[in-house]
Length: 243
Image 1 (cartoon, rainbow, N blue to C red):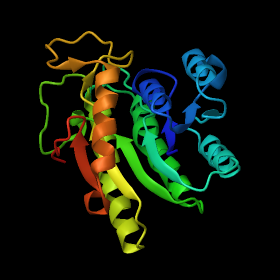
Image 2: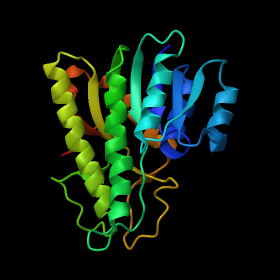
Image 3: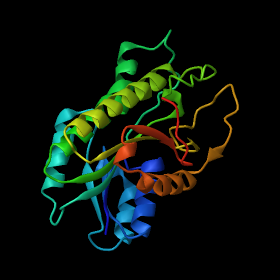
Image 4: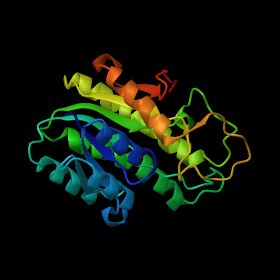
């Protein structure tokens, strides 16, 4: 039974990861900022095999919360390996234009989309528990090689994902130098119809897919990547994406 950690699992893509992983028989450790309010997550856990889904609190914008979560993971019974970690926590406060955004709103995007996921991965890697793959939820907005100029109002979001991409690439290189075989991946989930993406835009978004389609695609792609792929960027369809 593979063991998977989903950080940011109370809604959208994260919740769908939990749904599909439990359906195929995996053991899932799922997090939410406010576990008491994560009704859909509790509903999935209640329908699963007893003990298959553990729900833990984790707010990736608070270092003490990350550390508390990792301590709880270390204390879980019979946890000898973590096969997959999906760092899905993220925010999009629209609009977030470079010419208008406040200091606090820019920091909010960076803390949630960049710093929190990286520190969570770092703390998990510092445990004695072997980890197979850590996947960071990135975005095509974070690509600097394929700059999306038409995306008005996505500056801070794009910057936070670009920073995430650079940090995870360094993490992959550092792990290789330490001869740690954990695979580090970035993934673009597609243009997914979720609550976070429910904003009014001045352009047509092409190729919108459901969370179920996105997650099914990512679950096909992630297991195909080996240590040689660590520090690479992929789409939900299995296409390598430019940094």
